[in-house]
Image 1 (cartoon, rainbow, N blue to C red):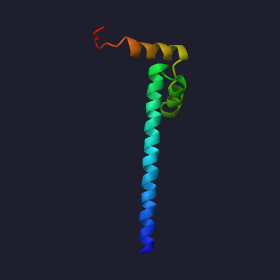
Image 2: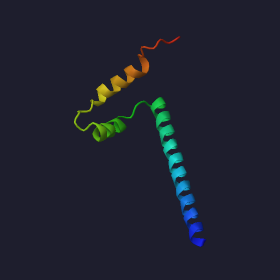
Image 3: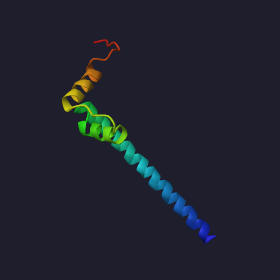
Length: 82
């Protein structure tokens, strides 16, 4: 009986850690989104992403990256009312 209680407690502790980890990750995503809205895209994060997921492709220069992000943000082909 004591062993089962210990296993249940361990499972509950693991679930709590997992939930806390999920909350922290959500907070990181939210902070990144706010930072991107206020400051603009993060070139360092882009370079890390390219190195991690597309190591065979050369990343854009900072200037080209900045132009591409500005184009995506302000020159959207979806019409705007103002």
